[in-house]
Length: 379
Image 1 (cartoon, helix red, strand yellow):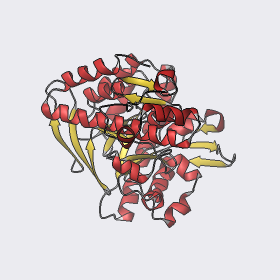
Image 2 (cartoon, one colour):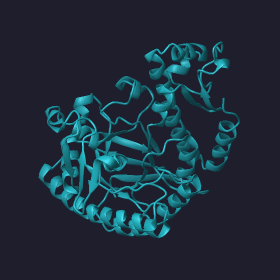
Image 3 (cartoon, one colour):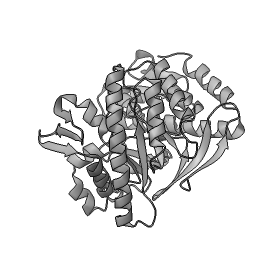
Image 4 (cartoon, helix red, strand yellow):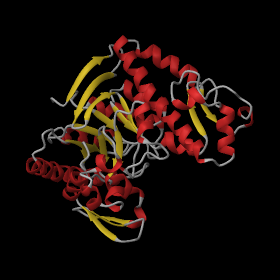
């Protein structure tokens, strides 16, 4: 595939680096994508995103469709003009949001009926409509509407969800080709297919075998990190990546803890997103090379050191733990911004460290070094 080129491979594992070409620029993989669910990374500005070396943002079709709405986005020629973002954007199809709002939705053979969580209005998503919506959003990477099930789920439930997901993927891929031909873009939008199957190896293998037959530009691992054990999750990553072609990027949807990112990259995953770094920042938790710290804890009230001496972000260069502790305890909004900047930069920097480890072919040692430091203590 011309849009994705592998640069280096580890001799120790499946870890690899690559370049994913999009309309709004190249994405160097492995990469962590900050989540801009509603065209905004919570508490963080566009300048902040540039400073932390953001490669790509993740936004959401479901939320953007409801608010601000497609007509407003069309007026700005898509999400980039609307939020003044110059880099690549990937949009989730909204399948997970529909899943999480189970009391407000009904899944049928052809799509999903749901009520808006904002005003209760009725809506109907189909695989084709979701492609049209992402065309209006004008994101760089589009994803296919899928059916996500909770974990644990029965094999029967997971198999039925996969059946619908496969059917919808076929419809979406066909419609994507039609829309792409009509739009005639100077550069190609990319389509990623979502793989379901819960924690069942046979279903994951079935999903991979089917998705390989469709004209998709990348693969999303969906339906994990939603209630299963870490062992089950890692097992399903291994099964899935082992059954996928190596010429396209693999994206794990909704994974954001640093140890999980290291483990997933070791198995051949290229892209990640999660709300964890900004959500935890709003709750006063910072990710550091020495482990997680809770800034409200008493030891930090008089601590004049940065959150992480190994970090190069604006927060660590300019502010002490004592000041951040004060901001958090006082309920100052600046606390959310500064810790969010740090947490996002921490995860992005992990992917930069990993890229170098792959290039230097010492992934295993660098992973051990990180784990030894990160799990030394949690305060």
